[in-house]
Amino acid sequence: MSTLKAVRGTRDLLPPETALWNRIEATARTVFARYNFGEIRTPIFEDTALFARGVGEETDIVSKEMYTWEDRARAQSEKTQTLTLRPENTAGVVRAYIEHKLGETGQLQKLYYIGPQFRRERPQKGRYRQFSQIGAEVIGPPSSGSESPLRDAEVLDMLASLLDELGISGWTLHINSVGSSADRARYNETLRAALIPLAPQMCVDCQRRAVTNPLRVLDCKIPEDQPIIETLPKIVDSLDEESKNHFAAVTAALDMAGVPYTRNHRLVRGLDYYTRTTFEFTHGGLGAQNALLGGGRYDGLSEAIGGPKAPGIGFAMGEDRLVLTLQALDTLVAEKGHAYIAPLGEGMNPAALALARELRRAGLTVELGEGSFRLKKSFETAEKVSRRIVILGEDELASGILTVKDFATGTQTKVPRAELAAVLAAPANA
Ligand code: ATP
Ligand code: MG
Image 1: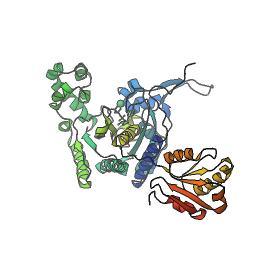
Image 2: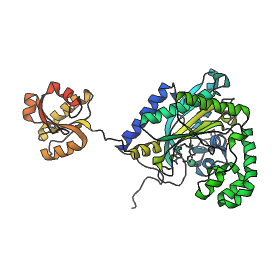
Image 3: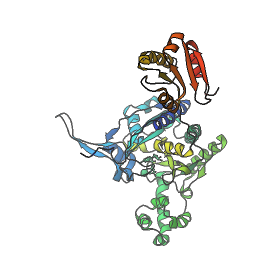
Image 4: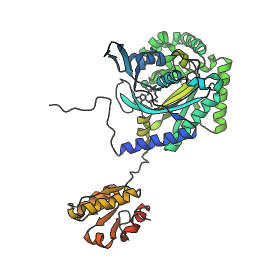
């Protein structure tokens, strides 16, 4: 019989790597809480129509990457539905915002999420079919200030602080403004005209895009096309006065707060309800999949899925890529537990459990050994997982004086049981 494996593009996360995932999530929760965000948890699957409308039929995500199936009716009262595993979470959050009438509170909604997303892409390093995103959305009726450029700057400041706090040094924030949908339509025509004489010298994909969707030419990664793309008109010159002012206010706030950024004229999103600020944080350590996160303003999204006017801005970070970056930065030190209890002989096993229980209840991380092991094996096992080893034999149990060896210093000491927890809690080689 052939052995069963995890499906292509999915993976098991094992210790000790899962400790890193937990640390990233804990740091994100702490930072989000400081900015007064609350957590939202939406379902893993939704009506397919939500993504068709909320992400856009023409996007790669919707046109080729979704896991979609027909969910047959089980009873007369049910309808057969077409469902999809969420490929991203913004559409779900905005659906929930509308469904629960969060706009009627009049308050700005600041929501974050952490969870799996699914896209049928070609698996490679940093690109999986099940991956995890950490994201947030700031959304509300216009009266809540949701359109303000201050909200954009605050979100970017929060992201910069989160990456710094995670220890991800060397990130770059790219920002741009794509203006209103009218601005973008105007820019698309400007690009189309500019590409007529240039496209024949470009790659085949660009030749096609120049006709069908000129904006996508800006995403081209072919090295030979880059000098040509640099000469193309920039979207900033197609923005109306209001969008220009909005963008200037975002950058002014970033300058004042000291958040570094670079302008990237090529960062555009092709969808109608994406408006104004768009951004991406990249990191050199990631190779080809260098985007840690992406986001932007979506002032028209709520209306596109049947809701009230609710301007908003949000982002999604690839948690898998945060993990890869931290691993590449090589700043990780495997955490060892406080102590390993080594019972001398199987008869000491119950007493060892009692001692381990005592120490664990005092808040220490304790590995419980096995009395049938020879002492040498106990020492070897202990050194891999713990900072210290505690020997527990008949004599130690009777006298209440235990032998403790500190692996960092190599010193061996006698410690009364009443003082054991305090001694083990002290940093190693102290
Ligand atoms: P990319 O250009 O890398 O395909 P994208 O534009 O599809 O990114 P978004 O939809 O904006 O990405 O998602 C936000 C973030 O989620 C990305 O910056 C990336 O870190 C992460 N991400 C997207 N797709 C995947 C995937 N298949 N596997 C792992 N992480 C992903
Ligand atoms: Mg993608």
